[in-house]
Length: 108
Image (cartoon, rainbow, N blue to C red):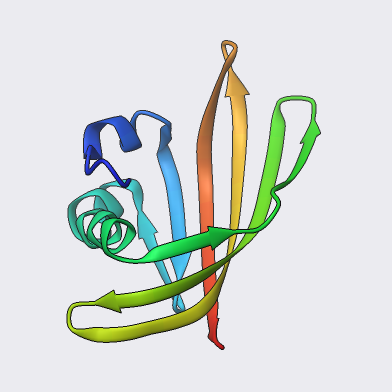
């Protein structure tokens, strides 16, 4: 994300992945064409301090959660919030792919 390499980001995303944020659901294609460019810009502009990752694995399914504190400025507006992230991954052919991402946030 911070490098701005959309192709590299999307290599780990399954074709049928869904993204949940702000009461909306996006397909992989919708995320890649709409939301991803803004996410990459945000990641480059704002400092994020990620807390510990919690990783759970059950067979070929894994879920990872984390909290991140964001602070800085984006598009001329101050940023100061805590974000929660949850990813669900599956292992197919020895390769882990992201199946779902859910983001939520709250102001500090």
